[in-house]
Image 1 (spheres, rainbow, N blue to C red):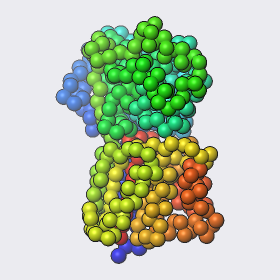
Image 2 (image 1 turned 180 degrees about the vertical axis):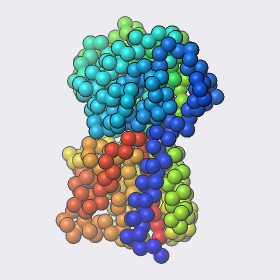
Image 3 (image 1 turned 90 degrees about the vertical axis):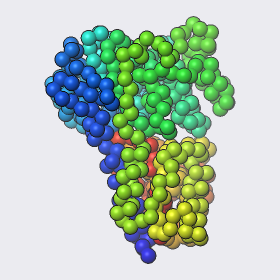
Image 4 (image 1 turned 60 degrees about the vertical axis):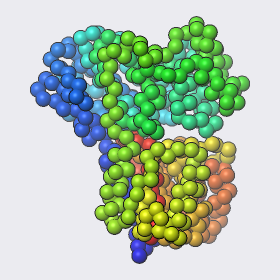
Amino acid sequence: MKSLARLRSDALSIFHDGLKAADPVNAVKRHLNLQGDRLEIQEQMYDLSTYEGIYLVGAGKAGAKMARAIEDLLGKRLKAGIVNVKYSHSVPLDFVRVNEAGHPLPDEAGLEGTEQIIQLLLRTHKNDLVLCLISGGGSALMPCPAKGLTLKSKQRVTELLLESGAPIQEVNAVRKHLSQIKGGRLAGLAYPSTLISLVLSDVIGDHLETIASGPTVPDGSTFLDCLHIFENYSLKDRVPSDAMEILEKGIRGEIEETPKTHNRVFRRTQNVIVGNIFLALDAAKKKADELGYYSLIHSGNIEGETRDVARVHAAIAKEILSTGSPVQRPACIISGGETTVTVRGRGLGGRNQEFALASAIVIDGLETVVVLSGGTDGVDGPTDAAGAIADGTTLRRAHGMGLDAQHYLQENDSYHFFRPLGDLLITGPTYTNVMDLHLLLVA
């Protein structure tokens, strides 16, 4: 039987193999084939010799490494480029300028970089090719508030929605309607250039209009939808007045809606998903198999309230111990997705740390069970941790240090629970983002 120390070590190895598989450089290169002047992307062929200029723009945590892949492929063919990335997420590039900015809340650096992207797009014309690189975090990293809206107000709206526990689809619907570039508007700025958007997905179902608020795809949401979102979370009276004024003008038709499916700006646009959570899940399963586990990918579409989802995962551990189902021991259950934390306390943490803490409470005393939950972007909430690891001894060790797990869970303070235990998962910047990876190991 595998020891607890071995289980923990194996969990870390499996997680890191999942990270490696989601590398943006490899993801982009797998989807592009260049032969001479002919660039093939998902059976679509582009003759690069027919374009007067080739430009690159983008935003997201993986933006710099995605740009690295394009530079490796096209080199001096690139005329100009700029990508917005999170602070400390730059890599050396030769032709593309990298602009570091704030995430998850947008800041002035992001605004300045986005304005530069817009100016670059406005210089392009029909005989140009624009490559747009989109990855998780792009919504916050490509801010350009609608006219009449301050960045501070948009920051406040984002903050309110995140704190309310609204799913990312609803957060992004609002962002689109308070932006000059999201919700398909980037495609409008690039038109009539040919636009190729390469997307590393960080959302359930790989819905293009949700990833980074869909800057290059039609938007199915409306100004009225945004108003209903504020009402559903009782935020209407807390939203800044300039943001509410924009939504109300949009509802009255005084502000143009985001572009919809049949808009001409999408006639010369190709959107391609180059990678998603299943890259990480498949690699994690392969590693688990190599380490001698009976492994199972439970789902790549996990969502819901974090602590509830965590309890269900932990319950699977009990089922494996008692019945050997759904897989026999030693077992490794692998899942991915993006859960939601409704913040009620004043603590510090993120959804992955909270996942581990809620799991630790359920598996208390089960000394052959390990749970690891980590964000593939290396960042979990406003912390320096990607997530945390817990096992059947976590609560006993915590009690010996005077830490009450239930109290820390109620306060959404998972970071300060796991830090003294030495059980935070620290990866540093991973330069990718394909949602979260959850591992359950049972021996």
